[in-house]
Amino acid sequence: MKSIIAGVVVGFGLALTPAVAQQVSSGGDGHVKIGVLTDMAGTFSDISGPGAVEAVKMAVEDFGGKVLDKPIDVLVADHQNKADIGASIAREWYDREGVVMIQDLMNSAVALAVINLAVDKNRVAIVNGASGSIITNEKCTPNSIHYTWDTYALAKATAQATVKRGDDTWYLITVDYAYGKALAADTTEFVKAAGGKVLGEVRHPLNTSDFSSFLLQAQASKAKVVGLANGGSDTINAIKTANEFGFRKSGQQLAALALNLNDTAALGLEVSQGLLLTEAFYWDMNDETRAWSKRFFERFKKMPTSTQAGDYSSTMHYLNAVKAAGTTDTKAVTAKMRELPVNDFFAKNGRLRIDGRFVHDMYLMQVKAPSESKGPWDFYKLLATIPGDQAFRPLSESVCPLVKK
Image (cartoon, rainbow, N blue to C red; front, top):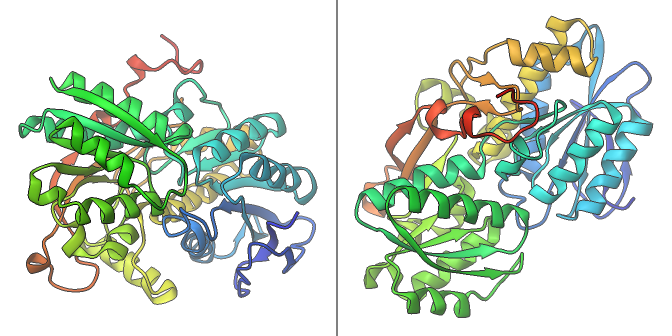
């Protein structure tokens, strides 16, 4: 398969050419193999992509490069945002390479396909990139873990905050696939719950370059808030066009439901200032986040996104669980992952629930104006901390078949 970059041993350089297969190292029998399946060059590559690979490598190196006295290998592949390609790679890894855990899984359609395979092959799938809340709701499994964020939490904080401040009418611009639909559905639910109204919605294809027609429809709705239920380059293109259309000056508030740090860097503060967003992690929160992020920056030359920080934290949590369980057996390891709390730079007293949801605090942020920024990567100001048990869907509302009512 052209998209595979297989068998990368930690410590070796990565040849990041996703269109060409490269066998960097076979890993060898008896090695513990982790696969990073992500978007290496497409619309979401800045959110996860090569940075996700670097974060997982950091975790493996910090763990010592071995677990249960076996070397840890990291395999890397680009799923090209296609569920069939992602599933094919995952099947190859599980069946032929002996991969015990697949990590990152940017793109909800890809994540759902791999999760199903993880159940069939009795392996582990950790989702950091994708955010569809169905992953721990109707599509939950005992083998899948949703770590960084989900559409429920992203939508809840942003929607409730805007309605609370009087921006009570919304119009949604939604990317037309599973992730966007889930994000739009969750946002609609929380806008209504807060006493607001969603006046309309328009859907666009993935990787849209021209948002003019969609934004004109949003302007015509007269909604106070235009919510962007998309991500990556789609979000960037939409915000740039909205700025050209004078949205901020006209009084219509833009709410980016899945904006990330690299998106803001690409846009610049002049264009993105004032945007509301919800994050799972920000590099400049405290001494711990700054220390780890500085290490990441030294290796990758960019500050980490929430997804990349989650890739590190969840890989370390998985390896700690393997060590505690004394085995890579999926049932034993996932049981330990649910038993052991996470206390690191990413989460304090984070807990993995029975539905696969990793529960931790979330953060409502606003993009700073250029005059407020003190230097490179100083993009956000914290508006509110949302405790994990308030940010994520409560088990009492879950339809996950693993949850006992």
